Length: 400
Image (cartoon, rainbow, N blue to C red; front, side, top):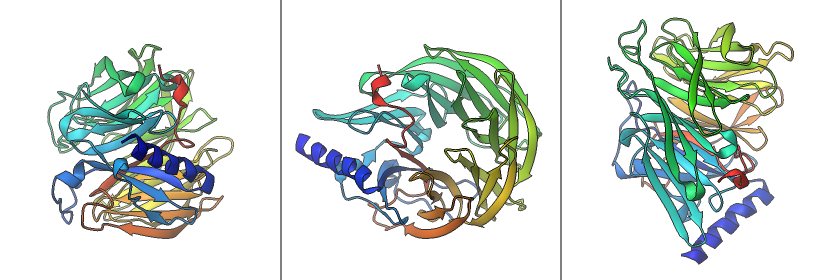
């Protein structure tokens, strides 16, 4: 076993020298509003699969058995901490079992762990406190639920060998104007930002919650921002240097710019821009370039697109650069290779498209990778990406 691990890790290390990027892909199953999506055998949807991306956007599934990772549930969101599978942790939120799964490879074997998520149906996780804390958004489905039971933000310590220990749970309870989607709280994301804060988007309550994250992982609610009723805030990103965050709203099919007020405990909306006109669509994911000059948003349903926005150098406000076709029901995205390649996961037909990104934000379709139908290629209905160093947010030496 040790020889197999060393061989695989040596290959992963060599990728950095060639400029190729080793990604990991998780599944979101079928979207409930996609009538053309067919779920296959349950087992293939319990795997995280590797994805090798080359400089020209070509993609393939490496034939390294130990890089296909079984989670015993649907890994709908992925993140990492550390320098790779040897020294770090691959983390998945397993929505249908309400667990957090962690995985690493050591020279003496594999480490797999499952812990309860601190709520129901975890759909998002982010790393805080320089690798010491994991923040988890517990969505609590189904979408039309009229109860908030299980909707929460939870925090965990990240310890040696990816050991997770629950620290705090902040329950969300409430609703908003759309009874079919907002009958109860639905925490769709919690994102660690500068200044020891985290923003949690609650789609069901039409609010963005601001939490202060203590060094031990304890959470304190310090602010709430109400957004347009019925818009359903989903995910957000922070500008790398400006006090501005960008929020994609699922139900409103829009992206909004917010100025962080004071120390960031409150948000003031600057603008809101539609990303799709069709009532049969809903916005999904948002990503930002490392220099903050470009913001990307996916929209899925009848309008399957990726929109690219330029950010204003002074105010940070957005201007639409371009909109291009995307695979059906585009959900997850990833900017890789120093922001020269954009990956988009098509949930409906099990496919990933790669785009070449120009410096001004233009997108050119490079390659398409489709399902092999044998359970050995892409995981069915891909919905999330992650990667380790050099795109990992942290360095392993901060893990305690």
